[in-house]
Image 1 (cartoon, rainbow, N blue to C red):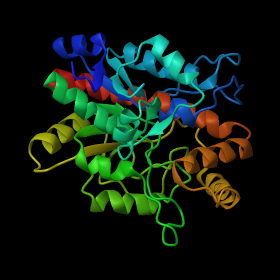
Image 2 (cartoon, rainbow, N blue to C red):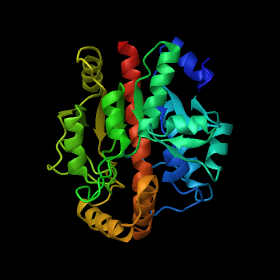
Image 3 (cartoon, rainbow, N blue to C red):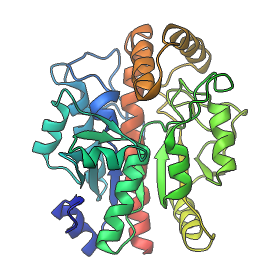
Length: 333
């Protein structure tokens, strides 16, 4: 085993047994979700619109990761939660490691840009989408196989006001560089969704709409101003498109699968846009990695917790769709 990455035994067994593996980021654990208990105005819902159990007495971030893990497992796949712990990349966390990470006050988040620095300084942090894609690639090279499927809530992208102050997430370039199939609900709502869509096209990242024509806005449905590359109706279509992109298209990176947020908890797109503009004006002075968590916290407060419910539903629904895709890919391979 490489001294730079630790791969959990259950991941190695899954590869040997040709079971699907779903990679999961942890920036949502260390910075994206509240670390305290919280009641919700509505229970979160899964991909099929079924309400999920929720305990108002348990910390939100750990409870959500537990729901996501269980969702992936229930669909016959193995969750590979990634993080950097004491300078080492971990691909697959134990429950003990997950709890420790969630309770570590100084744990931040690492993207591909600062992954090596975090390792060199022996830091502990959650991984963003780009950091998780890098970890997937490291694990694939270590095991001599393709670990391909990842789930997240919303990807990073182009921040609003980018013409005055360019602020573009490393997630986008990572998607163009690393091979994978990433399930998301579009860019985070606080971003410039249309500009993000244009950058994805420029970088050659195909956006597959799962039963949707538009790139979603993370907590709401999208608009025709940001169309997907192509709409598909079934898991098998995603599997075949990804197989061909990976094996036939020269120099291809990732495929992005856009999944609309569950209907029961999604926000009204017009209301969401007004709230995002308000959050942007309140937090205009924030820059760098802390900007997104600050904006999301502002949104949570202004919606009375409805954005948090929508966020949790998105995370679970995307993990479920990713698990279905991973199971299909493992059968094809």
